[in-house]
Image (cartoon, rainbow, N blue to C red; front, side, top):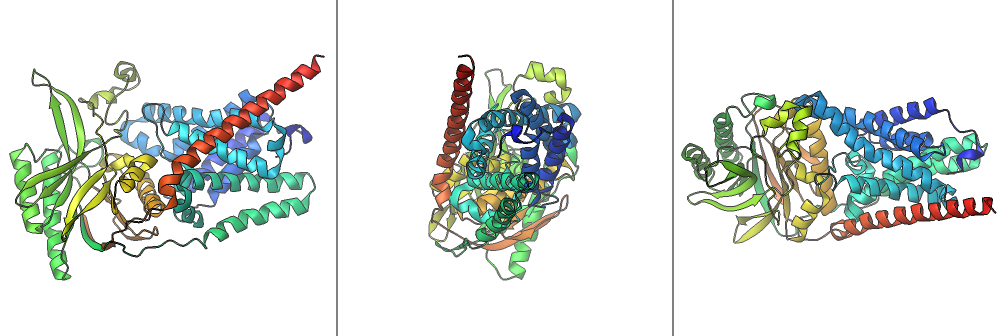
Length: 525
């Protein structure tokens, strides 16, 4: 992009207004509105807002874009745990966008970054680098709301199997930058250049439509049944009657069996969601009886969500695990996967004494959840062999490495068991389903998101949602899904692209600092 000084710098108030509008536009690209082209508009508005030659102001502008975006996008945090946590969480995430704004002001001082192509490339790399940073830090990061997840109903989704979230986010950011150039070139009275930029914005998504997304079965098929049992109460009291939740899923399984018999289909496996059996059927007799009844009626393994506890010598629980258990009829629990990425401030409370000063809701988490270990796989007997099911429990679907590692470990189908009961009628569950759609396409696997209360969905390897449920209603899903073994380029390439974004951004920042220092040195001679 041309140097900020080549045209009058925008007024400070103008940049802040552009940032606010950009944050709102970008949120509208995500579910529930799903107006995916508005992600380009949101990025364009941010680029236009970051035209003042001050890193401090760049941080403020980026932070303003971020706080606007996250306050709206993460409204479900407010609905779940209240205003204080919602605002603080949004501020922390907005700081990363502020970092991006400051970094871009510095990068733009490097003269090649003012060229349209180099500028779009470095802009995209810097954005992906900052997305990557907030995906692993602090407290193991929060990759939710990456730009890539806004494109699950648009043509750029077809880039997912080529490079995963880093590639799709980068292309969204780059197209947004080029869209900003349309306005900029018109301001410079360069209509031909503006038209070229506009054509680029239109052509890039159209070219993505030519990328094939194979869906054929490579290792047979599996008949999957999924049970959304619903909960007695919504909100934080959803599991006050945990036995009622187990009973709902038991009944849902009986209904599913009747449905399969009516359709003349033989089940291979039944999927229950996260927290569907909060009383552990491995240790609790009443919960065990309900699960045994359901599994014997189905006659096939059930994958169910439960919790297990670690106790100290005094008999007090010191830690717990979020488990997904395979329960076989006539046998019981035979395999388990424990969630590797517990959600901070929801499943465990870091800095509890400090957090308590912000909100007393932290004490609702009485026993912190511990990290499990991989691989995120549950083997399920299908015919004469055991089929590896990749499992990403709830928020784990947002983490690139969890799903990718499960596919590298042999997963032929993906399962996302989740519990959305605490988030009411917000967009949280639909945002999560969009991530499940992205992962299905990214790795070329069929996927099932099964929730306690919805939204649940069956997703084909090409991202088509063939079945989905509504919120807070009991439902069952039944589908014949392809088992696939081939690896997409993204499964192995995406981490390298992420590191490449770090490298390009770091190099551009270094060169800008060297150039600035050289300019200052010449000026003092």
